[in-house]
Length: 106
Image 1 (cartoon, rainbow, N blue to C red):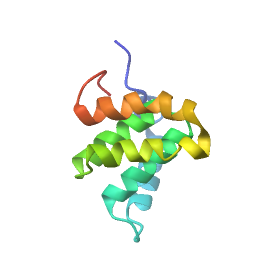
Image 2: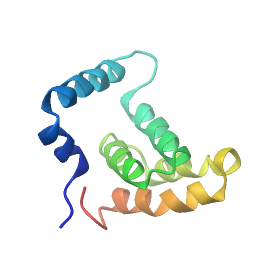
Image 3: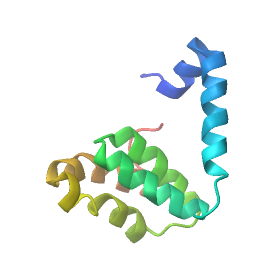
């Protein structure tokens, strides 16, 4: 069984992980976008970075904040004209798996 990379980061670098979490909390608290929209933006960014694990993580969070399946898929496919088909194809399965609760656990 593979280890959760975030848990491993917390175990191996606890002080750095704590500071990272503080940065994440500060970013989450910025005004301007609601939490669901922030997660949809994160999905789009992770797709642009071709990071299926990140897409899966943020798709699950977006779903838990009330995002529809169409919104999650839309956040992935908006990258088609920006970063190309490959990034969409790399990340779309992870987004759908997370939204539907199927596939590998995080």
